[in-house]
Image (cartoon, rainbow, N blue to C red; front, side, top):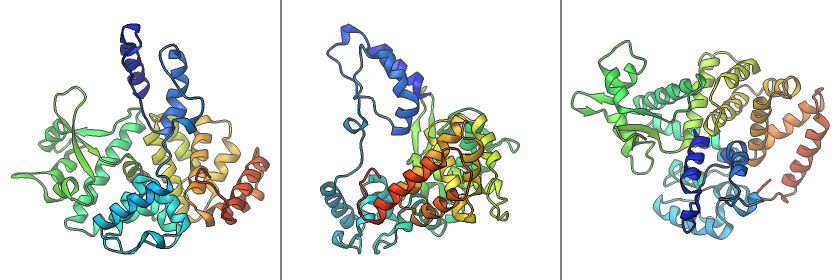
Length: 363
């Protein structure tokens, strides 16, 4: 895992004979905060870690960089919205380089939407998924995407952090109808090579989804999602579909489902992102906050559950889910939740700043 990799790198270079070699280690902020920060303290003699995240964290484009990047993307994707026409809140979201890329590919040759709800990660990835479904061989493309994500989700749920499927395992499954990957293998491989749907996912110029990478042991190739955050979204789709009977169950997924999954799974940034997206998707699907409120009230002493709740509420605030923030506040006011007064005060302060257009990028 990531901790073993970090230790291996430090063990190699944390030697005085390498004092002229500098190694820069980067990771997603969640991984640093919840996995590597504490471990790094053991190597203080050989490593430098800024005391403040503000000195090391990459926050996205500055206002000037966004204007430059949007001009480049605007020309490349023939955007119909001029930079000056972007709303202040959409500019904040577009400072995230991946969000800028996905928004531009989603609205190729079109105007960007005007509403905040259309710039959330779930909304953008949902449109991306639906656009794929409505493209050439789209149904098969989506089947491939969801089957890969379903397999990886299953790996996480049995305690194995996996981000890829090896071509060797797929080719073995192709001739074995009882193999779990058999159906996926048949969607990818044809007698004369690769299927059209799989090729589209690999090579579509404006929106490639999958890529081939060499395995860590160098013995072959593996299939990966290009963007981890899109993988998290598709894993969340699979999770919600599984536990809502493909949406036919209109009540929210019970908190016990998440808690059981968290207790069994290999918990890292991708899996936590998938569970956060699943909670968000389920709230949007049902307009029901019972699951998250129950988690706050009854499982506040469970670290993984508290972390998931914190991740979701941070996302609701950071991605301008205004309607849902206010609805959640009202429910919290009527609920008997441990530390609810503190939570409500924090949410009220943040929403006042948002409402008065005084919110910082960090908020």
